[in-house]
Length: 549
Image (cartoon, rainbow, N blue to C red):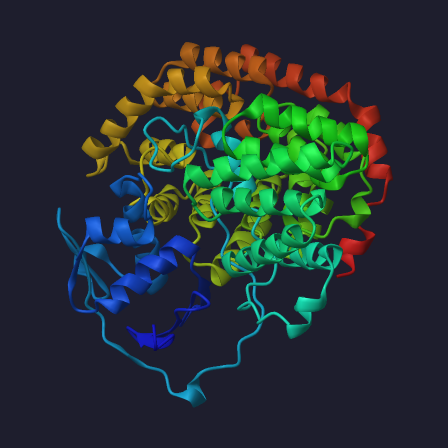
């Protein structure tokens, strides 16, 4: 596309970097959302059918209209466009979309020099999806929560990848592999492609270089994990990982790469086994420990996850998502002071780490710091006004403080065009607030679907978080006994977030219930028994480096 920087609806849009600069600051588009916008810009003023958009942006991949729907909704939020009175993207029901906004060039003097920035965060694991009929093409619903957590790991530079130095022709396989890893760490589509190019050069020079094969496997797995590649990419990644293990069976990097690939193919137990093998070979191997910890945490096994984190020198952690994962695990086991330190450190590394803002806001609400909670989420929304997770967190703040009307507005904004198999906790909260409003019929349809499908989803995924959502559904239905039954199920599956539920208005009917208090005490006692392990982690002093960044 010849004009990479345009003015669309008065906003400066960089179609190469994926930035939209508006009155509320810069918004970074996710890769597929950017590709949809690029297609609409190429056909500005013309109707582009859904079929054409799907074929162009997701070639050779079977996806549903919901995927496209989410991308269009994200563009509307970024431009502040109202689908009922569109000025940027017009919807033609059952036909497609048309870019109707005024589009023009940006003069060179108006175009700032590019610089590294931090990408827009993806949906985090705490906003739940069940994967029954979901439009995201994942191989195995049992791994869906884990995939969402890993997909949020997008920190790092997003500057356009610079050309390779001519000196690359003289590099050894070791040099090429080292350079490939540097590009891999940037976590952008361009950088991942460059990493693959360097790893391929390395294996062409030395076909027995196991670390280069592991890098290739990791890079292809990332395309499946973060950048919506098709499952054929995952199968290719598995072949590469198997090659790495065959050539380097004693290298933890080979087994970690295989674990990452298997996790993205939905082969959860095999993935965990591969990570454990990497840790047998190198007990302080941070990537394997963190990835396995995330998988354990998604299943309520936070004590095991934190025990893993004690095995690594956490002072070496540089990614915000790694610091966040430890902080979130500490939050769930009730170590709130330590959790706050890690989550704050994550935001020091990456101020746009949305998940850390969300958990810190809950900590504020649990501790009764209501003004702090509101200020925290408002400041985050000023930087990322279209972030669904932040809008949902803002709604939680207003719900806890009794401002139901404001909470309702935040939730409607967050859930506009959201598929009904995502953000389940937020949908239930909106139903709880909105039962008597005009949207009752639509919301009741959602409630019926949740009531019918959540039991199967809980059984399939073994997720305590989904069981907790099922308890909320029962409370909206006025069935306290069913709600307690679901909470018992959640506890059996690993956890309930009892301290949060004790301040959540959704669970008010249970706040005085003896069985609810008993379950809460049981969970607290469960984590008290692991205090020795947790003290080892906290005593390691892991935040010095991150806090000084």
